[in-house]
Structures are given as structure tokens and as C-alpha cells.
Length: 69
Length: 476
Image 1: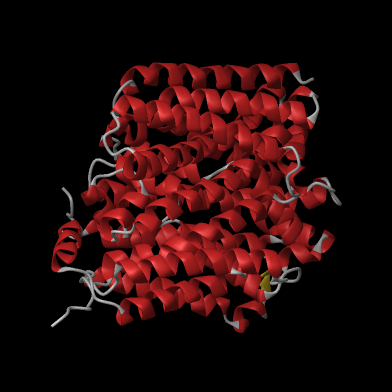
Image 2 (image 1 turned 45 degrees about the vertical axis):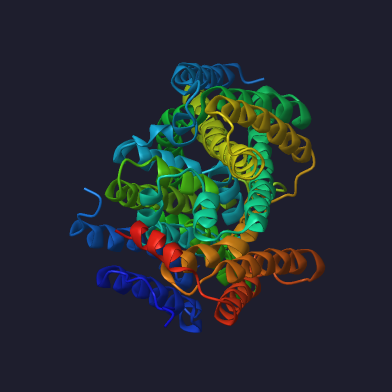
């Protein structure tokens, strides 16, 4: 019997990965393009915020990780 | 000629060359030192080195120019992709690569897939993509040196190219890493300083944006490009970071897995600050200070000249050189390792000594550097669009086989080979022979690569138990 499954990804990483994908999809939907703040599309602000949110989420996930130490 | 600015920039370049000479003593005959800095780089140093490797001439001249021309939402969607790519790299590739303990992305693919074709094709893809990336960096250096010295663009390109190649070729990864820390700090500091002055002068974030979007409404809107271009810009960078050679080499330099993961994330936080405030302060402020610029990539230089006293202006220009040098050196090293390690050592002469390989790296660095210099004489207008298109080739061909090779047991050599070839050929065909919106080509080539890799893998025999055992070890 051949094994064509996946190597396991820790749950916390899987959750973080799904969060990134979900946020990206959410921000690219049309609703974010219909509003603006200070003349800049809400889409722009959300993408700008994403730049800070993404590494912060991952650093929080890493806090409980002792891999490689 | 701007004497004070020139003096500051020259002192900076001399310091970098001095560091290269110092580092030379460490790399004479050790390829571990030459390519991955002896695998002893800690979190602080690697954070700044990763940040500086990604924050290129494109990130100062290019990104502010792009924001000026195409608007803030476009830049943020592109760079949010890059920033998201780092956590993805930290989670999906850092551990297996650190555990593998080699030098390049090709090392992993060669270890996972026993294909002579891949061992030749992948280094070629890397050299073509990274070579194009270097051309964009050299244009940035040329623009800055031209402004600084008052000489012709072509002379500026020759001068800066020779300096960059010289210091990379003498020091390898040790020189690149140590100088990257210095370069990273200078470029972040100066870009944030110029942005802060612009924000203060034009009434803070709200005041500046209100005035700038009144003067140039398009900078706040999604108008110039179709949505597929925005999505493509995001996807290219998000998928590039886990496989782009000059970042992957940084993962190998880390002393352990956690150090690699932390460095990737800290680097991105710093990068996010620099890009966000740099683009708001400089690109948007540029429309108030210098409306209607023909060459958008000069907006940072114009801001520096208007806002800063001469010595600080010199440092701000040195920051551009720093950005270009820190990326160009990493790119040159990635190209050199693709030729000497991936091609020569793996395919042509597996018994080559470390000294021979380091010497081949030196020659390769000069050949690729000089070729890039030649192409930089006539570059396209927007820096960032040029190198992002080049990165798209690597993404289209290497992202899927790398990620599936690490995580899906069913990926086999036939599937990965077909995926690499279909990804690369389809991307180049779409880029050259269709009129798809800029940077959207990857939205077709990447799924195509995924589809072909999976289908061919399913239709051909699965990988051997020994292969899967080797991959299993990388996850421990």
C-alpha cells in the first residue's frame, strides 16, 4: 500500500496559515474597495495593516515553540 | 557634484569594502563560510541581514516611485504579499531546510527528487531570475550615483557595479552578512527619517494624505491596474519568499530552527514599518513637493534634497547604496552558488575541492555582475515591476515542487520535473506572448504547475520508502 498522505503540520501553524489565507481573501473582496479613509481606499489600509499583523501572529505562535533549541 | 554627500557615501562604501577584506580571511578555503557564514548567525544579525537582503534599491527608490506612480493600495498589496511570505517560509520551509544543512534551494530539490534534468534546469532558472533582479538593483545604484556625482548614467552604472562586485567577490557570505546589518540599520533609519519629516511638514498622517489625495486622487484609489494585477503582485511575493534563493540562503545561515523562524518574523516587522511609513511619507508627500515627476523613481532623492542638511543627505544617499548593495550582494552570491555548487559540484565535478568551488564562485560573481551591468544600461522605467516579474519565474517553477516536496508524500521526481518545466515555460510564454495585466501571469502559471505536479505524481510510481524516510528526518 503506497502512502500518498501529508507530513503532519502542527495545528497552531495550520491555524495561522488558514488565517493568513482567509484574511487575504477577505481583503481582496469588493467590499474593501468601496470605502476610503483620508482619500485612500480601505483596501489599501487593510493591506498596510496586514504587513504588521502577519508577523505578529507568527511571533505569537512561535512563543510556545521550542523547536530546534 | 555634491561634495559633502559624495564624501559621506564614499566613506560608507570604503567601510563596506574594508569589511569584505576582513571577512576574506575567514572564507579562504571553506565553502560553509563562503556561502552560509559558517551556520553561526544569531537572531539579531540574521534579522537585519534578511531585512536588508529583501529591502533592495527597489525598496527605497523603487517602492517610493511605485507608490508615487501607481498609488498606495498597489504598493501595500504587493508588499503585504512579501511580508506574509515570511511567516509562510518560517512555518513551511525553515525547519526542513535548517535540518537539511546544505546551501541552496536546489540542494533540497536535488535531495528530494533524483533528477539530473532538475539539477541543470533549476540553477539556470535561478541565474536568469536573479540576474534580472540584479539589473534592477544596478539601475537604482546608477540613478543615485548619477545624482550624487553629476556624471552620466552609464558611467554611474559602471562605477557602482564594479564596487559592488568587488566587495562581494572578496568576502562571500560573511562580508554580506556583516555589511547587511550596517546597511539595514542605515536604510531603515534614513527612510523613516525622511518619511517623518514629510509627515511633520504636511500635517501628520491625516493632513498629508488629505492634501496628497486632493492633489493626486489616483494615489489613494485602485484605478490604474486591473484587480488581477493587485492579486498577482500579492501572490508573487507571498509565494516567492519561501523559495527565493537569496532568502533561502539566509535560512541556512541560521544556527538553529527557532533562530531562523524568529529572524524571518522580526525582519518582516521592521520591513513593514519601513515600507508603510516610507510610502505614505515619501510617495504621497512627493505629490505635494514635486507633482508631475517624469521619473517616479527619483521622488526619494528629491525629498532628501529638499528636507535634509548635507551630511544627513549624504547618509540618505548612502542608504540607497546600502539598499542596493545589500540585495545585490545576496543576489550575486545566490547566482554564484547556483553555478559553482548546484551546477559544477553537483553535475560536472562532485569531487571538486572547496577551494576550487570558491574560486569558481568568484569568477561567476564577476561574469554575472558584468552581464547585469551591461543590461542595466537600458533598463525599463519602473524598477519594482522589473524585478517582481523576474521573481515570478522562480515562483511559477519552484514554489509548488518545494512545498509539495516537503509536505506531500506523494510528490515524486516525475511530477516535480513536469511541474518545474510547465511552471517556467507557461510563465515565460504568458509574459512574452500575451497581453495579460502586469504581474498577473503567475495566477495562471502557478495553478498550472500545481495541477501538473499533482496529476503526474499520481499517474506515476510513488517515491521510494527511503526517499520518504529522508524527508521524514527533515521534519524532526
